[in-house]
Length: 291
Image (cartoon, rainbow, N blue to C red):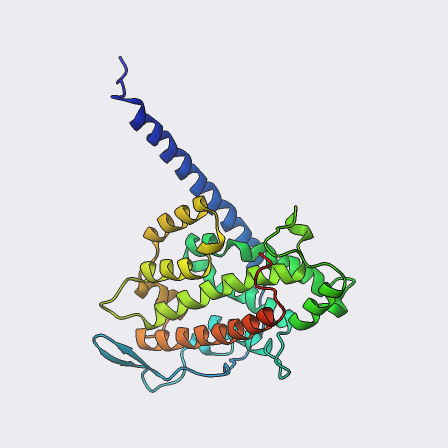
């Protein structure tokens, strides 16, 4: 004999909850597959100093946290994960005030590789980036490569060629998106990554946990551009976000917490430098409303 539902309301909400859970699992699975596909790129990189370094002290509620005076941690060494990510991003900032696309995309590939061990939420929140990197790389190395060496050059050529979308009107297929629009989507995802890593590095020991801080970063950088269902799924996924200690351990293996915080703060500063320059270039060309 079956158990009868007391009313149709609980049954209806139960079905909706099941559908939302299935949607989240499917979305995270697809994001993870895209992440693995793009995370196989490596490079022999040297440590790169960003345009401005953060001080070697991070103020915390419990006092001043200072990196021990010993050699730089391995993650900032020539073969370190953070170093491999920082060098191409730094190199993308050319002396003319432009952004070199090949170096920018190389930096993104290393960023994706760096974020892979952090868990599926990073794949979920930055999923727009994965296919976009590959799409821009096709242009950088394609028949029109001469027009895709830098952000400013790409935007100028696409405007002259009539390739730019009207503000707020998405192309029927992502493959038909302009390079400038694709760059804008990457730009937003970079902002979320930068804000999240910075808050993990500098967060107070007694303050909000890393999941809450990175959720706030998502609300700032990506949520305004995502549909309601994606936003709700993202917020739920942040409940399983790794703790700050675990994230610092993954970011800089073998380093003490103070060293890992300083290293991660430097990496976040590099991403911020790249973001700020890209933001100015896109704004000057009226491209911030393409998507």
